[in-house]
Length: 267
Ligand SMILES: NC(=O)c1ccc[n+]([C@@H]2O[C@H](COP(=O)([O-])OP(=O)(O)OC[C@H]3O[C@@H](n4cnc5c(N)ncnc54)[C@H](OP(=O)(O)O)[C@@H]3O)[C@@H](O)[C@H]2O)c1
Image (cartoon, rainbow, N blue to C red; front, side):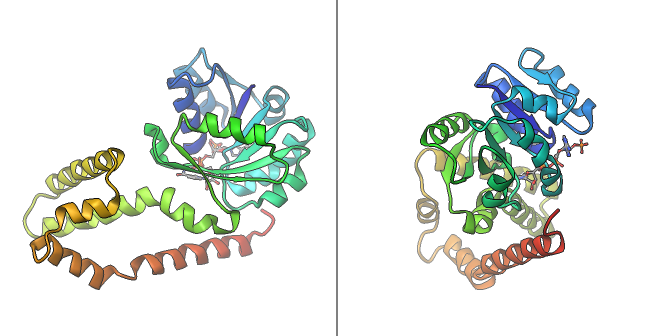
């Protein structure tokens, strides 16, 4: 099966680099609006990456096409892909704004929505998957197998995409920014800010490894927080000041997504 990636920006290049570096697939066909960007990527993996000058050209050779472009660009590309891809093909889009029903209505083949995360750079983290009505069991099994080389594929309901995506895809930014606020507070208490950031980076690496070794998040809290101790006092403050932060965050991202959809319903 030949894989094609349209858009070699952040997501498309990450998928291509990870598959090529891990030798998961023998070949990846790529194309990008700014051709030099695709060529720079191909220069890293000359044996694996084949650059195409247009989406139509790529669609003639790829059985599965990953559309890693912004929603307005994806909508413009759907008719081009739809004209060429076979009815047995698969179009996988990484953007959340286009619905599966709209995708399958514009294409002769099955469609999937895939929300990756920056954590797939290190072949870990969840990949959120929503499958269209035409996706066969065989296609789904092959897709899960392909994506397992990048992290943990997780099937989710399309109507809850926003909240799932906030956790797994936006989550790395939320967590990192929260730690930067922690470092800034430590700096206000005299710790050099670069030292504070460095220490927190090591701390979060350790938490990741504990989690990978089987610790749940609750286990980690319990392991560190002795009742009546200083960590427990810190946790009390966190709950007091930040208890509803994530409710507000989830409401805000949902609102922003709705605004995007309303301001450009067909682009
Ligand atoms: N970044 C993330 O962490 C993340 C996570 C999950 C989902 N997503 C979603 O994935 C989608 C892509 O995100 P991204 O961060 O990878 O965006 P990006 O870095 O802006 O990459 C988009 C790429 O698409 C190319 N492109 C645009 N129109 C094209 C066309 N007609 N033909 C060929 N290539 C075209 C652009 O080319 P140029 O070089 O000419 O600009 C650019 O390289 C978005 O919908 C985003 O919301 C992103």
